Image (cartoon, rainbow, N blue to C red; front, side, top):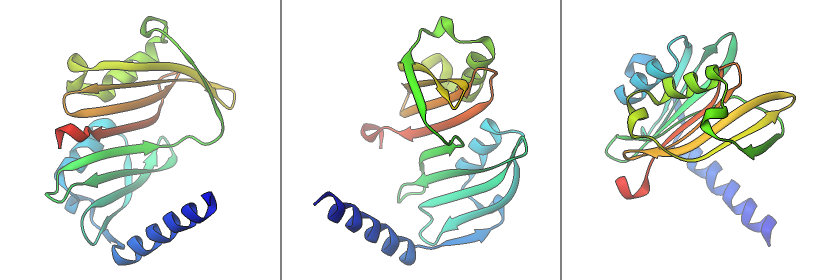
Length: 172
């Protein structure tokens, strides 16, 4: 039963992508809200290509961040407003445990605060965890600010590992 449901979900995704394919476009033609967020969160990103779907509901920015190939994704509602922004660059198994904000290394706290930017004064932490990815310690914060739900993960030394910013369902 589970495999049947999983196979159906995969088939739906393949059909959706076939009907709504990505096209390569110049970075400056992507929606302004996505370009602005990429520039704010990843000021040193070297864009190598940009892609957007035919329906303009999803866009991807490919680039190099500190020499590592990354993909930043944005999803948009039918009116063109961004509803999700995401970078995920980790691979491997993670372990986790709760931690207090005061226990964060300064570099990790500063990077989380930088990514939150203007949302920081309004940010309400829902969960803060620490863990390891391979043998490297990292920290993850989840919470909300205004109409956005945030997930930010950074290494102890302050390198951004993952960021996801998603519009809250009730704020749409």
